[in-house]
Image (tube, rainbow over all chains, first blue to last red; front, side, top):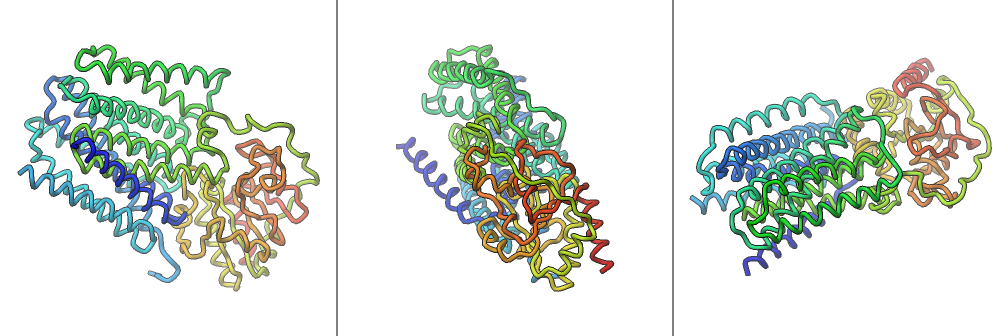
Length: 95
Length: 457
């Protein structure tokens, strides 16, 4: 049963992703790609768990690398997405 | 405590999905990324209380601070034209992280079910390929690697390497805890090499497809490792991104009228059967002042930007010129081809940076009808996406690709650096058409001349 629950999560998440993206206008493709790039930065929590129960020095080192890379993914993804979205303005909203 | 941790992950997953959802409209998009950001911060903070973490807190915090600070500094500084490679870089880091998680899990050799072990190995493979592949994409876009390396039999070598990796994967997945560290090391090294070999032969114009593909890869790898760690937030976020990225990849491939396998495993211009049509006519040069007059007295001007505009950093000048035209009562519209530039929507970002409002920027489907009524179609640094051969010449490698119908406008003006062919090496019939004039020069310089010309009228 456990395995099937996971399978359901996979299936529903896949459809959700498909649905969300299929309605996005072309002008937002880049921010959206960069935004989804940010969202998979959630790998950070996994990296922290992996490092948090690492036993040998080697495992700790690889765990450290995982956390470092994940933090870069999350923070970098956020910063560039935010910067891009800030620029999108319609001719209606003049400063 | 474990209940609170799980509850926060649940909230984070909801925030991610709602955030991405809000990104489907330019009006709410900014709020969307902030919501997702809040989800990320919550999930990260609560993970410190995760039951499986019992030491290394200091090092962990140091790694977060270090990685975050470097990414923050580079992300704030990068120019909008360099955005594709930065996204590739951050994406590669995520893939690398997923692979490193898998490495820790596999090194510990704890007893786990066969399903889990298969997913751990599979996620490791995809994550590693996304990592090294993205790094190569970064190097190419950054101009660190200018050549595309190709040799005969390359596909066969790649296939061979992949088969070896695949067999090792099967062994790792089904050998329980009996596999050795050497074979695990070989597995990761080969996966790294495969990612490099797969990306090295792919040219710049295909990068929109490649970047979104690796984005999907990383998402999938994160989702799989989430399963292995029993972390639903990772599973959901990873798989949502994986499927969204897959769809985006398909859209890109469709916009080029090439199946995704063709982008990855063949080279542009390799496949044409027979010779392309001879191009009749000649390229007719025009000077900037004449173009300025032509546009200033037009009713409607459609501007088609391409990668050349990004290279020349001409987007600000282009908008300055457009505003001058608007002041004279000319209707100015921008037409964007889905694969213009080096990532999906690249041109939109550059125009937005320059301050062009998004409601005068149109997609291919929206604008193509309008070329018939346009007085001037101004092509800046675009090439294959306006080549009429895609409509007419069945022998052309780009035959069937949807294009912007610049040739249907009363006049087409092409700003181009020199007389050579573009990336694909295909002659562009538009350049030889009777109603087309060529304005040679660097994009930014040429547009500056146009601005001066319009001002003097």
